[in-house]
Length: 114
Length: 114
Image 1 (tube, helix red, strand yellow):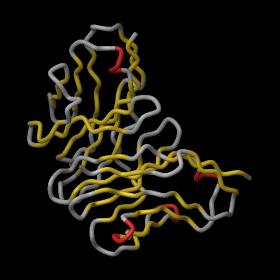
Image 2: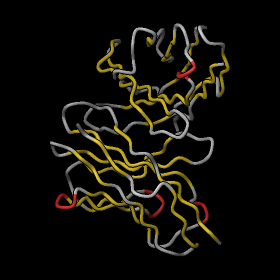
Image 3: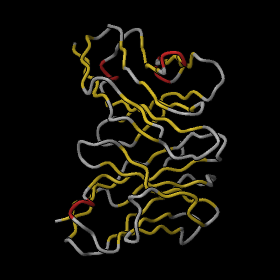
């Protein structure tokens, strides 16, 4: 069965520091992978998606993620954190071709310190 | 920018009562979804809906749940007889097509069953 694991339920960085949020997936077929962000009292917003094209995916707000098949990882990074990046981040997977449903990780709450 | 809307934002009900959660998907989208997130847990897929029928449902989506697209704009989730464990945040999502795989989420309805 497909699943994603997000290491670290809480991550705290200083403003201007590198953001690294980890996601590992488990899938028997090449997956489609997503990162969503949820700001307080809002819905889930798509940051970026990997759908078997380029392994380095650029998203909105300066975020990017790299698909590494050998490591079954899809970590989210941003070179320089901004206060407005404070939110909860969800990694999700859907097996290509079989279904559209998203299988989510448990989320990582990112805090940005001034 | 078009967005998915959900009403109400918060619903409180007594155990055993019926509730209907409402969603207005993005107007040119064809695929519709419900997910839920119990407090402190991951976002879970409930059901997907396409061409006026359920295309996939999870084991959570038992006979107490039903979905409907009663007109050209609304997409509803009905819980016939609510249980305490139905308390959760319920998210509606819509997508333009299956190949795109991008799902746009609403802000959620927080359901509290007493």
